[in-house]
Image: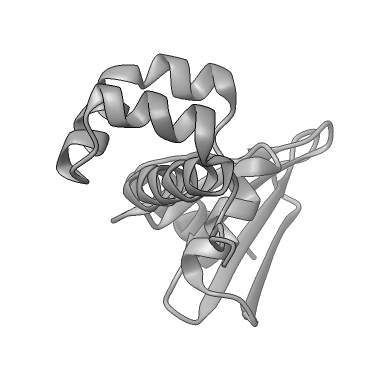
Length: 142
């Protein structure tokens, strides 16, 4: 049975950067160094399952407790709030900040999936006060 990956597998570079965390994860899973070497050589399906479990755990921790993200393209800045079932977005024109838009969407995917997709598209996490500044701009518009 193939392990379902909730987000995406960590890249080799990401895994290398998290080597110490991965070793702790293996130990907590009851997999010692020698056993891991055997798994890597003899059981590729099990190796993929372990890597998927670790990747899922990492992404869940990255997304945990987060609600606010920002994304920029050439013309606009977008501030996003991820509620449990909805995403609220403010859009500000970079050339004319008086041009402000707001949108509230009910999502078909989970909050964590929506945030992960935004992260993969280039959004970054921001603090609530950054988002709140856009809310205040919206409320003051004429």
